[in-house]
Image (cartoon, rainbow, N blue to C red):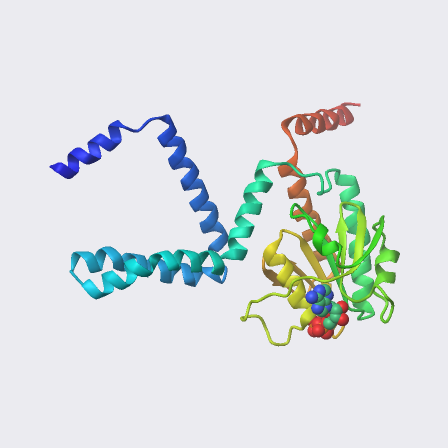
Length: 283
Ligand SMILES: Nc1ncnc2c1ncn2[C@@H]1O[C@H](COP(=O)(O)OP(=O)(O)OP(=O)(O)O)[C@@H](O)[C@H]1O
């Protein structure tokens, strides 16, 4: 009866700020869940949930030793979690920042986007045919200013011939990654963070590990040409997909980058686009 009264009292005390409070916490938990699921943190999270479940169980069944150990180590546990989940927490905060503020790094014009993609894809295709190792990063919402500073500043319009030139073996810029922001090549010879994922194939060398590493801590699209096989791969959100041919690469890049544009368009921009399309078809 007492429990029922407590529940009723709590329900009676719910006001608009409690609802907002609950919604914010639910949203944060949901984002955290989405980021953790299918990552190396997923198994860890299951283990933690299991340990947390042991607290009420040990309390109910009077398992004094288990209860004392778990409840006493929980504070250290929280600190350890922050350290272990650091990349995931970082990604979550960046996601929240991204949804809150619009960014101008991403291409907003579909015509320019198509042109930039065409130039990149043609370069990737040629580099693949000549088995020239290459690492190209297309920056999205996560700013890569710090990584760009590890290389040599270029600041030139994206073009197939320039990209091909950059990766000519034994030239000063060929080592490391080339970073593209919008329709410009920002810099080349940049050093990317290597992945710490122990599950990836031993056959993959540092170029692919560097691509995966950056894709784990940013939303960039990272393209790789293998020097050994000429294979084209794409790293995105901590995953590496291999064996792209020219057509598939073109399609996937346009698809991902266009969806970014659409997400970022304001209602006014969408309306203007719709009206201009309508004008074109009626004239
Ligand atoms: N941290 C890094 N950031 C950027 N580029 C890197 C990094 N580490 C290595 N690279 C690039 O990768 C090259 C070495 O590639 P390696 O042969 O080890 O990789 P791989 O994944 O086996 O690729 P490939 O199939 O082309 O041989 C280096 O010469 C350098 O250009």
